[in-house]
Every structure is written in C-alpha cells, then in structure tokens.
Image (tube, rainbow over the protein chains, first blue to last red):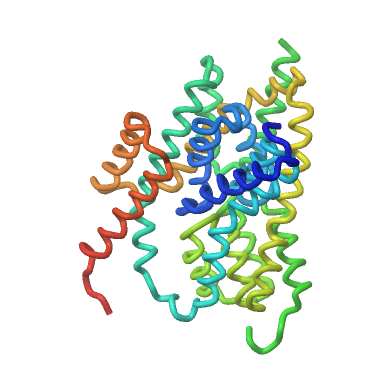
Length: 182
Length: 185
C-alpha cells in the first residue's frame, strides 16, 4: 500500500490521476493499458511492472471490461477506498459523455463525422499497444520458453479465438505442474 | 419501447447477469448484451443497439457505454444509472476480492511462479488486441506511417501517451474536417 486512505488529500491526488486517465480514454477499452502503464508504472511509480502485468491478467480473468484494471491499480495503491475512487474517477468522464449522448441520441444518430475522426486515431492506438507490449517484453521475456508461450498464446487468441480467461488459467496451471515436476 | 415501461428491477437483473457472466472483455460482452437486450428481451432493435455501440466509442470502454445507452433508452436517466451500476458492480466486487488475495498472497513462491508463467500470455493478449484493432484498418500508407510515428514519439521522444492521443485526435479532426469533405448531405 503506497498511501493510507486516512490521508485525505492523497485521495484527491488519486482521483485526479485516474480522472485524467478517463479523459484520454478514447478508442475502446484496450487503450487504457498503455495509458496506465505509462502513467502509473513509468511516470508515477505507483505500481510495479509485475503488478501491472498481474493486474492485466486479473482484469481478463474477471468478467467485465479490461478497464477494470483501474480497480486493481487503485486497490494496490490505497486499498478498498483506492479501488472505488480510482474506478469512479476513471469512468466519470466517459460515462458523463455517454449520458449526454444518450439524451441527444435522436439528434446525433446520423453524425458520421466523429466516428471518422475516431477511426484515424486507431493506428496510433495500435502503435501504443505494440510499444507497451515491447516494453513489458524487455523486462519479462527471459528465455526461449517464454517466447514460445508468447507466440503460441498469440496464435491461439488471434486464429482460434480462445477465451483469454481460459488461456490464462490453463497456462498458470501448466506452469505450476511443470515447475513441481521438474 | 414506448408502449410499456420496463421496471428498473428488470433492468438491474439483466445487467447484473451480463456483468457477472461477461468474460472475455469488450466485444464478447457486447455480443452477450446484444443477445439479452435485442434478441431475447427485444428492448431495442438491432440498428438502435449498433448506434449505441458506435456512439459509445468516444470515451471510455464501449461495453460500459453501451450499458448506459440501453438503460437510458429504456428508462431515461435513472434507467441509465441502474444499468451502469449493475453492469459494473459484479466486476468491481470480483476484482476487489482478487486484488486483496493478491496483495496478501502474491509473495508466496509457488504463486509467484504461477504468476510469472503468464507474463508472456499477457503480452500476447495486448498484441492480439493491437492485431484485432488494426486488422483491416491498417492498410494504407498513411495508417502504417501513423503506427511508425507513434513508435518514434513514444520510444525516442518519450512523449506522454496522453499527449500522443490528443495529437492523434487533433490530426483526425483536421483531416476529416478539411480534407474529406466529399459529398455532404
């Protein structure tokens, strides 16, 4: 735990950090990974690289959006209150906008402009995701076996559409089995 | 949709269910939501639902936004609050429970080993997200250039992700606004 929930001002800081993440959260759920990685791991050092990886796995294991990694990160930083504040702060900007959009749905349903703008951002998000995986790989891929697991997982996910939660649990179990046998 | 009011409890029940069994992130959850709200309950039609998803892409995860959209269509503001909270509540509870277990037990050597084995899987997961997003969309010279310039900006200029995303949005805005004004209705 990096700071106590008793320290009220730090909760405001936490709120602000996640609120900012929520503000740049456009282009679908996965964009939150590079943003959180850069902000919380590289810049603010609030969570470690390993915690980020485990958090990503946990948000895939649990139902709901990948963005729920904010709940995990908040918990690591400041326990249950941290988790709740981080989640609330991160979802606040997007949800508020969606309330407004839903309210004015009849007026804007034929506007293709914003969707087109959003489409031009997609290559950038793809680039950011690749950079993030590259940065994580540099510290975590230690041997040939890791690389084989990476490539196999990628193929299973992309070609065979395996459920990520199933994949994570199977590899975890295989890992335990393998280590106890050897 | 207008003829009879759907009760808030009904909305809460459906979204709690989707939130509890919605494994697999974004698109998988959307498919489930569509199955419940469009196919089974017939709360809204397919076209309306797909508009909701498209409009939900602006800010935040689109599954969460789609839940707000459906709730709002059914019962206005209160409906949206109910669907939003019931959709997220199960995942928040699950994650808090697992996180507290994680904080207490992740130092145990055997568990640490198990967690380490999934490192490559998580990388594959992020890469597959990149692949799925880019598939079919990254073909033109321009889009490849954008991917490469993103590498350059993050790895060499070490720009903040926030700044890069805002620059991309600005670029998209200028491009669509001033250079793609073909046949407007």
